[in-house]
Image (tube, rainbow, N blue to C red):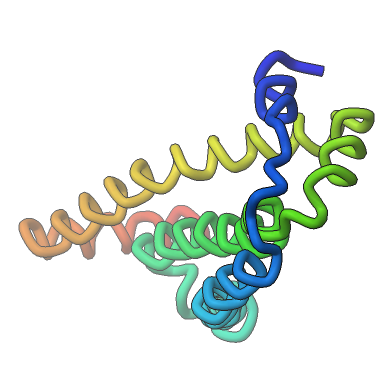
Length: 153
């Protein structure tokens, strides 16, 4: 088990929290996270499956799709893992003992979450640069798109 997962799993469970209040906090957060996940999944379905031929021709939509993928995965991880650990104190002891004995989950979950959080600003930089190049050099931008389509043919 890596040192980072040992640090996270060595936290003590605090029984002073009222389970009902904490569960209501989770439900309130689920109320805005679930629609976000549904909408991002719908965007991804349209971008990569339904209208794939149209959207994948344009570099902006490729970057936008990457941003949606990272956001979607982060929201799913929040709904099903991060918030469950935070807002269900009645599961603290069983989950802690389970994940201490099975370190595979934490060795995938924590690096994935950190890499995705790190990737989002980089993707945003590419999105902004892409839109800026479209506005500042519209003729060259369309030529670049044309050249990439010629190379694909």
